[in-house]
Image (tube, rainbow, N blue to C red; front, side, top):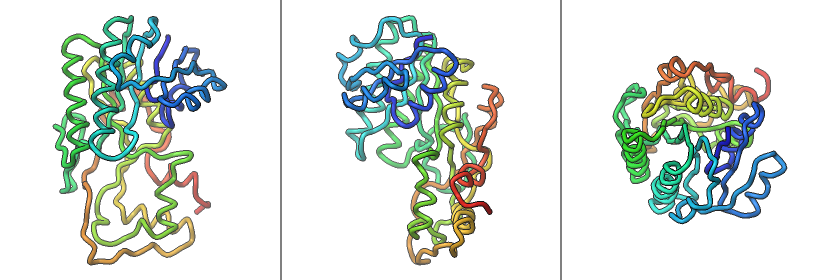
Length: 284
């Protein structure tokens, strides 16, 4: 199968490696020429394109059989989010209509859930964005689901906070004291290791249904205070403490993905941050 990875970065390259390992052909899109060319030694056919440009669709290979849209915003603010999640997806959907594409997987984000009450959120929970970026993510999903309703083979994988090799920010912030116990530390932390995110994407590519909405997230969310205590304990330092007067900020909801794993038939390699972060920490 010839698969296009749109936004072949940290996650996209992991997905590409898994596809290549099973014998698929992969074209990877990056917007920077040098970074695109760096894909070639990995066996990925590089393509330098700015997908937010509507004309970019004409340059995509004509024999594509699947598209994984995992491009990300190149910065903060509404403009980068619109380019990545609205304009680029519009280009990709348009191109898919004229190619033999039988699966279109969009990697969205659980950031479109802005609940702050600690409630459970599953695949059927309506989006509740609380920020401008969250509203753009919700709009992107709505457009993609509209395309699915019109017959395009779109399926959505919402990913929780990604971590893994090269992205161990939680450990770094506990070590520096920036990630601490204190106000708001009862909030749920929802995460997904790179390995499991890639597995969810491949499962949706192979076995997802048109219009399906899936969650790539771990099986045992932890509260922030628990994560700080776990990491600090493994580092051999006292858990950092934040000023108790600091205001609590950010969402607080527990993302569930049991339905996704049952429907798509895959198991998590790293079911919680204890296992996933533990691989990067001194033995306990």
